[in-house]
Length: 595
Image 1 (spheres, rainbow, N blue to C red):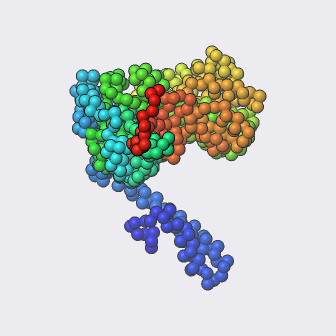
Image 2 (cartoon, rainbow, N blue to C red; image 1 turned 90 degrees about the horizontal axis):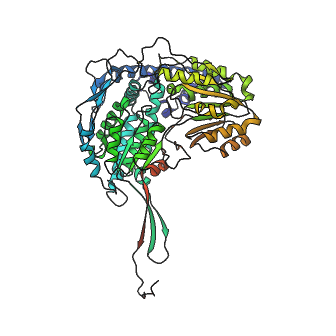
Image 3 (cartoon, helix red, strand yellow; image 1 turned 120 degrees about the vertical axis):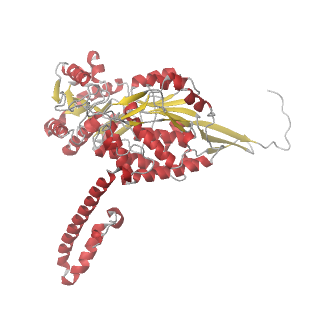
């Protein structure tokens, strides 16, 4: 009867199986203890019925959510599944100094899956002669920020409440589904990957609800040299800042960095990637609905050179950039080093000498290399496999998992920054190395209608012998990140481990890494001689994964930017300020001799 009620209580809240078992036990107890086994069967049956009921409710909810009339009032795009079906696409707007605006020209964002469809939306193509409102908005922001530990401290509390409301909104299944589908419309990835991005973002916002925003600015004191003196260290905002975000995580990366900037008292101008700008426009509208002052954020849609003009022509004191290393270096030079970068990641995985849990390791390798169509800065770019794994069938299992990926569920789809030709040229370049070969993939996808400006390729792995890989004429090509479903595979043994470590030393970027081994001595040696900022170790080690519960970011570069944690927010979006309080002159003070 309870299962037939309109409202079904969540299983984690009522421990349904335990209640079912207790109920069944009471029913059968008079007939003897052996009947408990029948009770357990009934418990299982009831749990299955419960699961079916929840699944049925999910299907009903999904159908209901397809109607735009059920979406919150701040949503302005309707059902994301309808993007690209109208000859009059949705028009994203700029936000500057608290007002939504547009520009003389617009950019059309083409449908990433169907070159014959209408554009999915347009964005303002803001020109250099239209940036004055953005310049004026940023010039009004003092270096001391919109709030700091001594100025407008109530804003820390206000942002704790805004974060609570936004986190609650993203935790709502309807809103989460909306953002997941909006993400998928812009940058095709599976629903599970898109929804996972929304869940991480919601958890981050929930983490900083209540007093946790002001705790980011927690000060510390050190006793002075004499009575009445104390030094206090504070976290101080930069004031006007800029934020440039990539296409591959349209919600998670910009939200986590944007909120970090706001929490610490800065005023950011946000320039999202053109292909996915609609996602952050909708999130900003959600923030406004949660109580954010519209003048706290400027949202700029334009091409890269125009964004750079805004940054260099205003007193922007910090630019946080996530994207390609090439653009990161351009910004670093243009801003005289006032950048925090989370740029390219040629991410490695080492499988140690201890073989085990082969099915799990193969599944994780497939996920790391090919989930989100390989378009993660943390994607597995190269895998060093100990020769002990050769007879385990690992690579065959990885290939089998990769072969199951399909455009039907968007586990396979377009690559937005790597064309098919560029991908195949790189594959052929590595396959031409003596002893190298394509293990699987290396082909254009069949039966697709993806625009030519994007890539349409199968998940690919190329084997390159270790001794050939480390040669000067080959290493740069083998260690080049391809933002697509591509990885290099090589074998090593106990005698060549130092060659592997030397190869890791010569890599230029150090974002994520995985040491797949429970051999403590091996694990320790690899960890001791490497520097990657986010490194997983152990049998379940992976390269991908940027949840809200631990630091994610590169190491080995003083410009490196982290994301997600209190330490990351403090490092990126604030500087240290020391205030020494020294007020009391002793009554018996006498002027000393000059020094």
